[in-house]
Image (cartoon, rainbow, N blue to C red; front, side, top):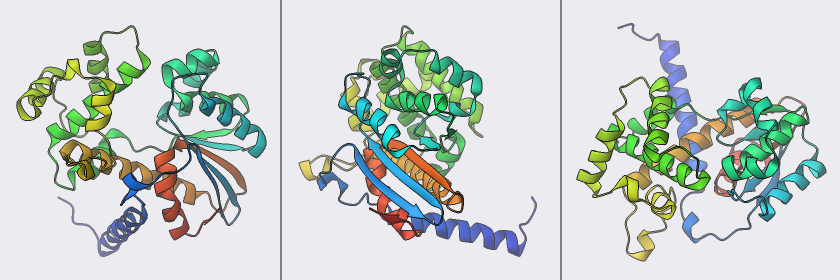
Length: 291
């Protein structure tokens, strides 16, 4: 094994310090008692960068007021750069061309408001980016905090089930989950268990029958916000993993925003309203003026 030089070790230590600083600045504590508007919208400015953060409500309904609000915000803010949540595929021109051939109603019903925003941005010639960690980066972030690999895989599986229930694709649930696990396996640096193994683990450890879960069940078990403790419930292991997943994604986005602060750009961010709210104090911590 190669030993790290003193400089390399110092750089790693500094990165961990910066990571912890950003994590500590995120406003998750007490968020379950906060009531804010959705969309949660504010501006953030630093150096040459002007940012409008559109904290959206997630929807698969084209008639939802969120869709009209996203469309109107593009027109009023006139961005030249767009960061959109959960769509690492925006880097692919072929994928975006295919997305833009889909009508708006189908786009929202199958993929959600983030895909709708990405299609608008692409058609307007904006610079597109989805600054999300890949599954390996995210899972390693969670593993560092002492969580079990099977619990992490079950967390991802519950996300797949919820996505399947929301978008109601033609594919069978088992097929959808297998494809999701194949996607994870392509990025992971450690072996990914089979769907059958994760099903059995869920039943054995948590008495969960994955195939019978509703969307609300999945959301409650993977909610990163501690809404249950105050109701004599439990912020369980899967909820704690969900929180760390969100924190890892928040940190990645914050770093991406800050990395272009010296560039003269008008950046629009379309991420969930919770991300928008909890990241605001962290943006201020790294020198942005938010209003």
